Length: 103
Image (cartoon, rainbow, N blue to C red; front, side, top):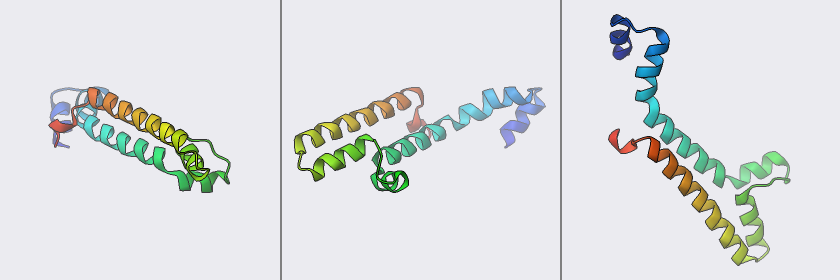
């Protein structure tokens, strides 16, 4: 809060405070929150099945369906595709934000 007051004392307008103070300080937290949400949503099969009434299409639901129908090679391949997609997303987010700097 004190940085906002310092910026205001230096003559910054509201949008300048948002653009140059608040967003740069919040960027690592936004990135970590985004990674957590995407990872949880990609792996949440039960809630998606309950909310959709059993008619859903997601990669994680496809993996569960293939596994229950004893199609292990296809389930493994789709699981790896899901994992690689998530890893690429996390790597992309980490490229723009240095989270280790904040830890």
